[in-house]
Length: 137
Image (cartoon, rainbow, N blue to C red; front, side):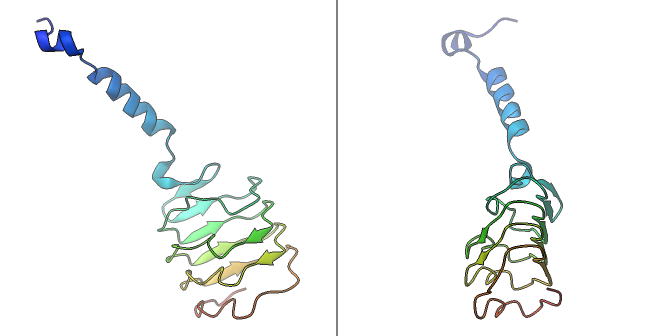
């Protein structure tokens, strides 16, 4: 059975669109996982990837975020905004010298924060005001 007259005129592009959509899914980040990171459930692992800033596109359901061994120099007040479920944050072995006031205000469930081996001299006042569950720093 051959193509209908309408298919001849307009062209049947479904196979091409299907192929393009499939290719798009293959190159798109899985569940919004940041480029160069790996995501598994609610754990985002971005260790040792040479980041100079906190990567964009961290999934909102993230509970554990590993950013160890990068070249991050500054933590801004928007880096972790919207990550309301974040409980564990690892930032050791970076070059962090500044953490802006309000940087942790959205992560009220934060229980563990690692900042070892950075270049911090001073922390802003009230930096941990909203992180009442923080038990390990």
